[in-house]
Structure formats: structure tokens, C-alpha cells
Image (cartoon, rainbow, N blue to C red; front, side, top):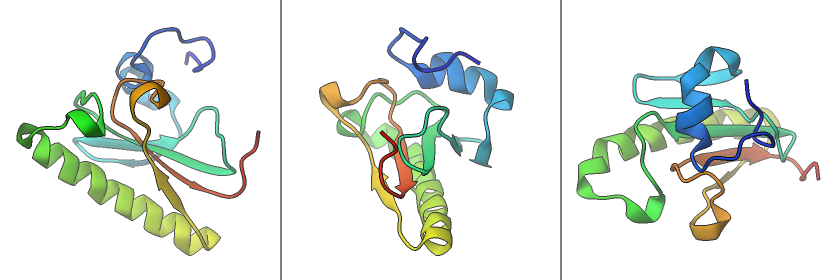
Length: 116
């Protein structure tokens, strides 16, 4: 699998992660959502949750995206609950605008102090 450092496009999830799910350490997979351990974690526990259908960003969602968003946040809630239960705390984060390296809606569920 191509690592994010070697990837130069703008949608890592469509181009790399969703194209080769078998290469990932999957936490949860549903027909519409994928959650997996980040390939280059920033925290000791770092899970990425991504809709399988391309959605640009939290701020560009429309009513047509409602079911995908419901599915996404159901998985985020499940993963965050498990991380909180196992590690005592969890953070849930999404990035927007220039903070969003990959232009595909995704949510980070993490626990622990930053690794770098």
C-alpha cells in the first residue's frame, strides 16, 4: 500500500485506502463506512472513519448525503465508545479547509498524547 508520505494526490481515501481495503488494519467495515487504524498514526490509538462514497467535507454536505452521514457517525460513535472504554478517553476530530489534507470527509478517533 502507498503510504500517505508517498501519496501526492488530494483524496487518499478514494485513491488508496478504499481501493485496497485488504491492506488496512480494519476496525469496522459496513456497506457504506470503513474504520481502520491509521497507516501513520499521530496518537497511540488512531482510527480513521471514512464514508465509502466520496463526500468532500463536513461543510459541503447536503440533504442528499444524510444517510451516509448517519452511517458515518454511527460507526464513529461505536469506535469512540470502544476506545473510551478501553483507554479511558477518546477524542473525535475532523479537519476542514486547508487543515484537511485529504479532500474526502473523514473522522479521526484517537486516544493518548501525540506521538510527534
